[in-house]
Length: 193
Image (cartoon, rainbow, N blue to C red):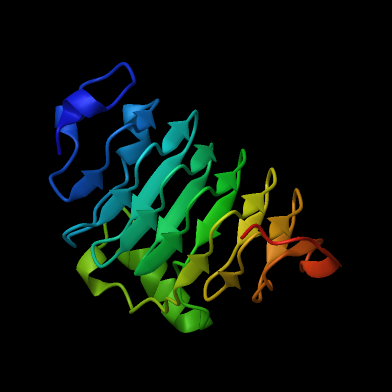
């Protein structure tokens, strides 16, 4: 990565080698990468002219890979990636949006208790039970409003809009507007072609 191509006010040479950043990106805060632990190569790809603002955070687990397409804007988006999150081109993700491809804890109560012990300060993270992950795919030209939550296994079609505070638990068709908890289609919009 040629760090001369980036804008922002910190030393991009501190980023891990498995983060691929295309020219024209703006990365506001180094802290956005504090929880990046991916061992994949690449573990994070930011396409051309991606803008990463304010409190955006990339929490990517060792097996995780996160891709953000060209010309997308992340304004305080929080990514929790155990395996795979793909964001298309020209996607706008607003403040306090959470996108997760896993629950990041077992659903079974006994396994959840073992997980809590394993990740405690006195525990052994290597003894964590396996996490169930399902890819999240967000197509081109999607807009996601403040405080929305996108959960594991969700696919959002091109040109869709996710209303503020919506909790998306199932697929969203292209050109749809969804709102609520759980999110439901409230209208169909035109799809940019």
